[in-house]
Length: 306
Ligand SMILES: [Zn+2]
Image 1 (cartoon, rainbow, N blue to C red):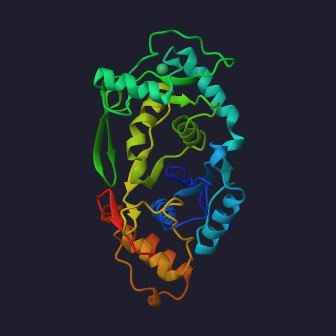
Image 2 (cartoon, protein in one colour):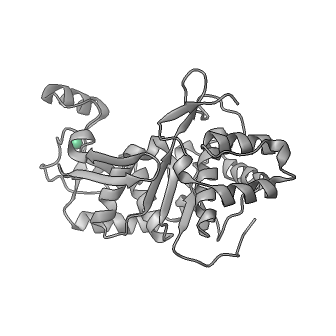
Image 3 (tube, rainbow, N blue to C red):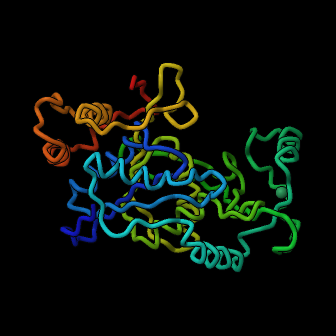
């Protein structure tokens, strides 16, 4: 349902699910936290379908996610956007970055990166910088990824749930991919460009994206984009310590008030019992009125049985 009651611009939040399956409890938490935080600031709340990686898209799951959100009582502002419809924006930004000489072509395979890292004694998964100074041309004819040269400076930001977070991109990540070898714009690039174009001021999302944030801030700085505020909420894991996701066979959210209350309490909000609420509107009104992000547990994950 579209909500057009708000016109303040100082808070623009968003929820950006990947259409890879049904909305499960883990994604309900991110939706709820971003929604409650936006609405408690009289802000806008936007929906974006992160379908940049078309190979992972499950047909019609975007529609299922939207209808589950609506059924749960979420109301969003503006039209839903799709990454797959914004490819021109990513292309323009990639060209802009290529002109800064901050990018380079990388032909390394995963296996080569692993071997080179081992040889050089670099942490597994960190790009060892192999192609950085080879000046391979950025062509579309040859198969290569495009990486961004990172800096060895410490990058730090304040997270509204997790507190101060610092990362040395070069040491802990290495030069990272912004355009994949299989000709897909990277998640990092597309998210930064989308958030900029939608004028997003606040990002509330799951802990698993905390270590992506320095990469995104690095990109924002290169592109002279404003830096949004960040908050990363704990992940819900099952009794086997697996993140609730399609892979762990998490169930579709049933949208009962008791499920909404369970999610609110997972987020540290001291919500009354489900039977205290007459209907979902009543629940949302309560949550938005009493929402306090400082109560969200400052932890990576919590177990939940749903
Ligand atoms: Zn390489």
